[in-house]
Length: 277
Image (cartoon, rainbow, N blue to C red; front, top):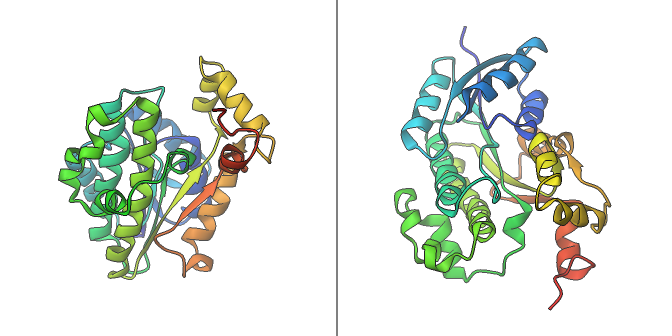
């Protein structure tokens, strides 16, 4: 029996929280570069009554993305996209961050946008990091938003000599995610579909716990101690916003980014987290 399908990329806590909130009654196809991670999430969800199939998927590869979409279409129409895949500044070199987080996300939004059904909806997980870097010029923003995806990594702004370190690469990738969502929302709208992005702050996940206990642990602990909320967030709090964006209550919301960071970015610009000169 054909049913609507959710594509979930990235086998992590945030993606699973959103899928559990929105994926009941649907076929959920989950992809991750590490198939064992996708299988672990699929087992948790299948044991809870969902209908989930796991597969290997590399966000940096257009072919891999198209293979996942083709698998999803075997079950029915693609109605939802949850993109929670990516690598962090402490996990990968500059080149990989740009190939996965920036290029891969652009390709995924483009390819799913081609096949999404009328009324379809997508959300991609960006990051507070995209809000921390200095403003780009309008011309640079437009290039990140509209450059054909296969030419994105050729942009001057993304060349190695113009990128300081992995954090700067990650900030650029997440800024590109937000701009790309804006541009793609216009194309998705032609099919009667919507797409938005969410920019979480520090959210407690197994990866974040590793970070707390790693070399940058004090930096992260200081960040949530000095943000207005005074704590890190949870995956379910991100899912609360995704539920709004992906439900009929969010029918007038598309092409937008939602910063959910407990006020850390506000503190970074105007409070105790402001970098000292």
